[in-house]
Image 1 (cartoon, rainbow, N blue to C red):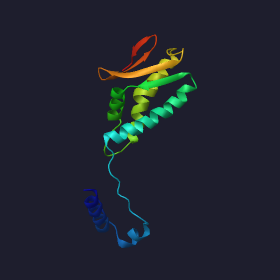
Image 2 (image 1 turned 30 degrees about the vertical axis):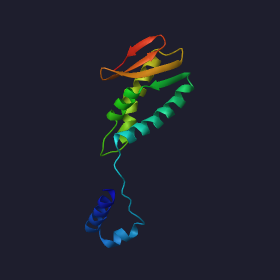
Image 3 (image 1 turned 45 degrees about the horizontal axis):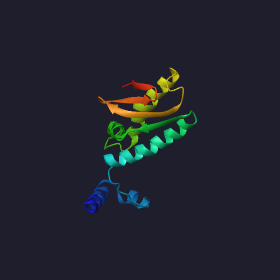
Image 4 (image 1 turned 90 degrees about the vertical axis):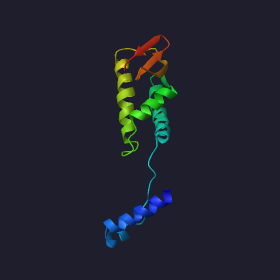
Length: 133
């Protein structure tokens, strides 16, 4: 249980650090490790922020649940928490979207659906599909 883990960790702290150091700390906080569902929630926040930027260019992303889960899995590392998620979003979504926009794709603005197909993201606009994975 969490309480047992917290107690064991505090005992380990006492074994590792001297009392003078521990007395300088106002509090020790034990965090529960993030799970994939937490990463999906964080991904939603990141995607909302990305959409806020894209709205200025007349674009909106609609990322399907399967694509979200795939991105979350790419950005999930139990040891590093949510840190790899930002890199996964940048690599698999933002960089590709930026490259395609620079090529003149999505110039008409509107809704872009991002879905998962054959272990890669597919960007679909009203005029057709573009597989960029």
